[in-house]
Structures are given as C-alpha cells and as structure tokens.
Length: 585
Image 1 (spheres, one colour):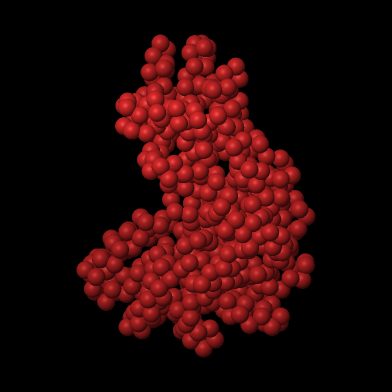
Image 2: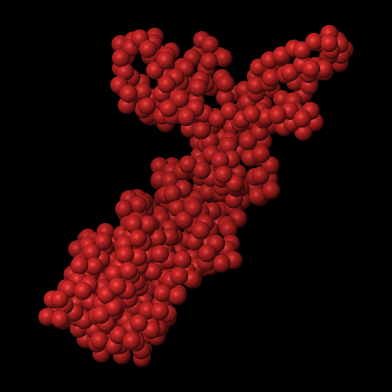
C-alpha cells in the first residue's frame, strides 16, 4: 500500500544524499508519498502551483514564465541552423508562438520536417486566431501536443472552474479585472475570486499585476475551442451589459450623465460598478478603455447589435480623453449596428457623436454633414432633445469654418427648440455656442452679456476645451480686459487641475500665455507655452478644433515679436483660441 511503500522509500534513502526529479506532478497529494527525509533534495515540475507543499513542507517555488523575445529567437535559430531564415521572420514566428517553449519546439520541428516550407507560410497559418493550435499540432505525440498539455490542467479542474476557464477565453483585450470576470461568470465577486484562484493555481491564468489577469494567447485559443456558442453568447451579453451600465454609473459620478438614448436593462446575473468620486470613475474608465473597444467588436461579431451600439454610445464621454482616431472606428461600428438593428433614432444619436469625432480630427465639413443628417432624423421623429443637440453642434461647427451668419441662425433655432420644449439646460447649452460665435464675429460685448446675464460661469463640460467661463475669457481678451480674463483663467485652471484634466489644463494655459504676451510678460508667456507643449507631448492632440501643436508654435514665434504692435493682436488671440467648443453627445 502507499503508506508502507512511502515508509520504505524514506528508510532506504535515509542515509543517502539523493536528487529526485518528479516531473509533471498533478497535485501536492501525489507528491507527498515520494518525499524522502534526510539530506535528499526533490525537484518537482508541475502545471499546478502546489501551494500545499509550500505551506506544509516548506517547498520553495520557482515560477517559470514564457521565454523572453530574444531567448525565443535564439531557441529557433539553434533549431533551424540548417536553413536560411530572415531575422524578422524568426522574430515573427517567436511572437506567434507566444514565446512558449513547447510551441516553439513544435514550430521548429515542423519547419525542419518541411525544409522547403517558407517561414512566412507557417506565420500566416499562426496569424488566424482559430488556427494556431491546429498549426502547432503534434497528434502522434501527446506529450508534445499543446492541446494535450493544456488538457492536463483543464481536466484537473472541477466543472464550475472549467466553465469559468471556457468563459475567460472570451475576455476582450489583453487583461481583465475581477469585477468584469464576475459579470462574465454570472457570480458575485467572492465567488469569482475563488474560481480565478483555482485557475491561477492551475497556471491557466496569470495575475500579471494586482487585480488584473491575463491568459496566454494559445491557452485562450484552447479555452475558446472548449466553449459552446450558446454559453459564450450569454456570457458576452453579460459582460457588455456590465460595461454599459458601469459606464452610466461612472458618468453620473463624474457629473456627465447623458441619458437621451434608452438602454436595455441590466442583464440578470450582472452587478454594475458604483463610484464614490469622479477620480475613481475616471481611473476605472481609462483603465478599461481598450477592453471596452474590444468588447464592442466581439459583440458585433456575435450579432449582439443592440448591446454593441449602446456600449459605443456610453463610451462617448470617456472617448473625449482619448485620441479621436481610436474613437472613430468604434462609432462607425456602432452606427452600422444601430442601422442594421433598424433603430434609426438611436443611430442618429451615434451619428451625432460620430460628427463630434470627425470635428476633433479636423474634418469639419464631414462633421456638419453628420450633424445635419442626425437633425433630420430627430426632426422627423419629433425628438426635441436630439434635435436641439444636433442643431447646436451643427451651428458651432459652421462657425468654425467661418459660416458665421448661418451658424447664428442654426443656434437660434436650437435655442427655440429647447425653449419651446421647456428644456432649460439644453437652452442654456445652445446659448454657450451662440456666445462662441459672437466671439468669432468680434461681437465681444454681446458675448460677455450673454455669458454674464444668461449663462453663468460654471464649467458644464470638464472634458471639453470650452465652457462658459472660457468663452467669457475669449471675449474679455478681445476687449483687452486682461486683468478680468486672467482672474477667470485662474479659477478655470484650478477647476481643471482638480479634475486632473490635462487637455483642459492645456487649453486654459494657452489663453493665459496670450494674456501674458499681450501684457508684455515675455518670459512668463514663453514658459507657459512650453508647459502647453509638454502637455501635448503627453496626451496628444485630442481636439484639433481647440488646440494644435502648430497653433502653439505660432504663438511661441509671436512672443516678443516687434511686429505685434502693428496688428490687431487681441482680436487674433480671441478668435484663434476660441475654436474648442462644447460639442455635445
């Protein structure tokens, strides 16, 4: 029996110094009977973390990760020494194998088996997500077959953990957090933590930083192969619902809740996040931004059209802190999904957001087309809130291309729509755009009156470059009332710093630099503009209607210029910096 055999082993080895290698151990229970006493050493390899041995027997664990890229390339070069291979192809093949030693060995064996097969052909096979495991098959040797090796870990799990592993194959993006996994599994956080802990112990999942988990790409392919279409579809729906409603909570915590588009209710088994502060909400949103984009693509691919475009809609506020080039493809997907679902009013909301993104990249004619198209849908449907929004955005975009009289007419119509519907907040927002147009028309007194008497100073959009106070500053600069402008800039800068809004901070600072330039504080103006350049280097050009690198360089060149006295510098300053307007989703 096992106990007697174990005792005999310990007795036999008691006076010896032996090295025992126990390869591919299933668990701690399998290892314990083979542990000798005395001065012997046991080296155990396993796909499990063998936590029990570390706890009770004091085993020292050494985690083996995948190879480094340089090590993977060296491994392949050594195995492929008899054939000519381009260095770039070697690196690409190593990447496709995920730097996993067994995958590299199988790929190298296949290349040596078919010496006339170009490496590029194998790389092309490995590029397909569903074909990587097939391309690395070794069916006649289970010990060398990736599926077989992964199955050793998978088969050791209980059924609940197997289900969790299969569902993690769906995880969008590179990593996933515990709350998202709870939604994926349809369990609470505590249960999700227990399940993931079992997967980590089996080395199927890795916690690469606190609370963030990853699957190796080839293991993810195996998880997807093991799942069913029905199981995967239900889990993906839960995940997208969790992201959408967590975004609603984040927007509310950030004071930026836009609820014009109706949403599907939260899916059963899903508990959206809540946030105590705007900082928490923003930090979560920025961390999850890439994953949400991947979730949209997965949902569209799975035919979940409504959930996909609703998530795109709710990502808008978050998108304003990211380059518009990342947002445009998602909005195109969302718009197409809404139209395919036959939801034309919802499509108009996304079209309006798409117009904003086109404006942010500097394509104002396309933006105006999108705003007008959305407005027509809202007008036909009798949707006052949507119509006011699209008209207001259209009017502001028209003003940016110099169609000022038309812009005034469109914005006045937007105000009339909001006023007739009793939407005081929307009417006020239309007036902000009108005040911006007045600045461009050099009607500075009208702009000041509109802000001071009818709008107020409070920032309505901390992610936008514009606010009533910023519009007032532009008008005050045009009127050469620099001391008043600087006081408002000081308050606005404090607000942006409190919100940790670097893009908004840059837009305040560039106006401060103009005031410093016009009051002949040359050194301060140059220092401020260099600070703006540093911010642009950090966050990029998030909105070309508001601020560009070229505009900052022009201002730098103008500081201290002797020609400044010969031009209407104040009008130039006010009109040149008044471009960033609070386009609204």
